[in-house]
Image 1: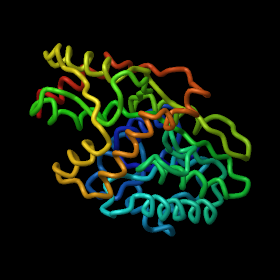
Image 2: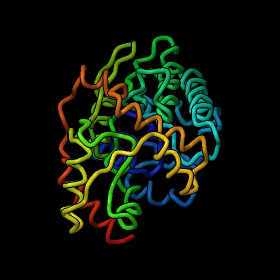
Image 3: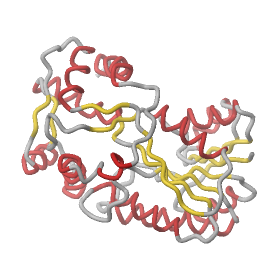
Image 4: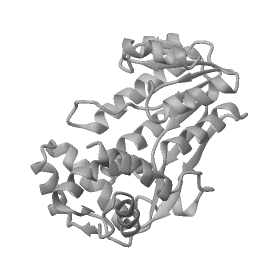
Length: 295
C-alpha cells in the first residue's frame, strides 16, 4: 500500500512510519522542516517537505495514496485554536477530495464527540465533522485519551512546589495513553479493509486516578510523598497566566481539565472502552524519571 503519514517525526508519526515501512508499505512522511528529510529517508520512507497550510501541496502528495493518516500539528501561534483546526481541516478535506483518497485515519481526541465545553479539544471535533462531510470516504476517527507525555509539563511544578495539580479531582478516573500505542492502533486502521462511512476507535493504555499517577511518578523520581492537589478552575487559570500562557490557551487548558473533572470528557469513552494498549503507567514512569533528571 501507498500510505501518507503526516506529523513529521513526532511521537506518534515516527513509530507509525517505522512500523508501516517494516510491514513493506510505501510510506511518505510529510514534514514542514527540510532538515528532517535525511532522518525520514533513514526510516525507509519518502520525505515530502511542505505545509498543512498549502492544500495544493497536500493534494499532490496524496495523489495515488491508498490511505492517509491525518493529524493537525501543534505549535500553532494563533490565539484561537479552534479556528486553526478548522482551517487545517478544510485544507485536508480539499486535498482528499482533489486527490481522490478513499481511506483516511484522522487523529482526533477523546471528548471530540462534544461541540462545547472541552476547550482545546473542540478543534478535533470540528475536524471530525469537516472530514465526515466527504462523500464515500472510509473514515476512522482515532480518539486517543490523555497523553502520558502531558505529565512532562508538571516537572517544573514538582521541582518548585513539590506537588502535581490541576483543576481535576484526586480520585477522578482518567484514561491515559502512550504515543506508541496510538501508533500501533493507527497502523492497524490504515492497513485493514474499510468501507465507506465513519467509525470511531478509542485508544488508551491505562486507566488511573491523579492520586495514583502522582504516587507512581513520585516513586520513580525518588519522591514517594508526591501528591496530587486539586485546584479550582480559577486557581488553575491564574497559575497558567502567571506562567506566561496567553489567556486563550489558559482557557483551553482549564476547560479540558474541567470537563475531565465533570466526567463530560470521558462519557463516550467509558461507553465504548477499548482493549487497553501495552504501555502501562509504571512503564511510562521510567521515561518520566529520565526526563525529570534531565530538566
